[in-house]
Length: 365
Image 1 (tube, rainbow, N blue to C red):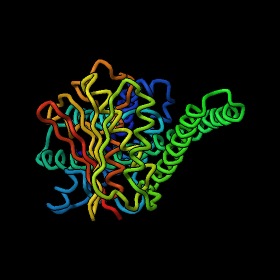
Image 2: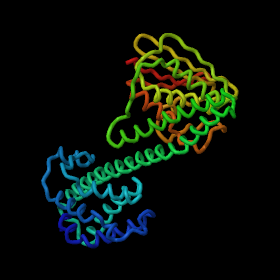
Image 3: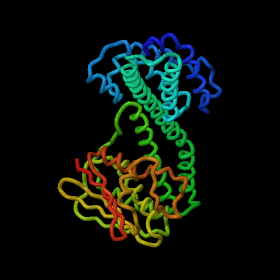
C-alpha cells in the first residue's frame, strides 16, 4: 500500500498515537482531546495530498529545506504552531510533536505492509512534507510567542507608570516643603525624568514590535551633554565607582537622545559590574564631521570569542564578576546593539592587554 493511502485509511490510529504523545508534554497534560487534535487531521490530509501531487526536483529540494511557499491562505501546520504557542508549549516540544508523528506513521506503515517498489520515493516525499510542515509551524509559533512577549513588555511599562508617578509627586512635595536638600531632590527629579523617558520608549518599542521597527524620536542634540547627564546618574547609583570622562571634537547631531542615553548607561553599568573592582571606567566621546563615537573601557578580561555572544539577548559572560546580580537578564548589550543599528551605526567590542572596550559609532544625521 502506498503511504498516502495508508495515511488516509489509518488516520484514526495515527491521531490516537499523536494525541497520546501530546499528553506527555507538561503544558498539555490537562488539555482536552479535542484541543489536542486541533488541526492535526488537516495536517495529515495536507501531507497525503502532497504525496499524491507530482513535483519537480527543484520543488523537492525547497521542500526538504522547509522553504516551499505555503500559499496565500494559512495552512493547517501554521495554525497548529499558532495554537500550540497559545497552549504554552515551547519550540522544542512543538518539534518533538512532529518528530513523534513522523516516527509513528512510518512505524505503523512498516508494521502493517511490506515495503513495495515505491517505498523509497514515498518515504522521501513524506519526509519533505513533514519538514515543510515543521518549518511552517515553527515560524507561526515563534511569531506568536514574540507577540506575547511584546504585549508583556507593554503591560510592564504601562503598570510602572503608577508607582513612578507617586515617587514624582512625593519628590515634588519634598522640594516644596524643603524637607530634603535641594541637590538630592534635583537628582531625584532627574532620575524620575530619565525613568519616564525609558518607560515611554519601552512602550513605543513594544508597540512597534507588534508590527514595525524600533521607533526613533530624532532631534538636534549634543551627545556629549547627553552622556555627561547619564554619567551623573551613574555616579549617584554607584558612588564607589570611578568614572572618567573625556570629550574630543564636536558631538552635535540628530539623534534619539533617550535611546542613546540608555545605550550609554548600559555600557557604563556593564563596565562597572564586570570590570575589576576599584579600577576606573573610562568614557570617551569623539566627534568628527560625519559621526560620533562613544567608547566605554574598563580593566578586566573577556575572551574574544565571547564578545559577539554578549550582544544576544539572555546571554551573559562566563567570566562574570562575583559582584554581578545573577538575576540580571543579560539584555544590556542586546539593547545597545538594537539602538545603534536603528541609528544606522555600529557597535564593536574588543579585549586586549587586560582592557575591555566597547565603542558605539553613529552617523550625525
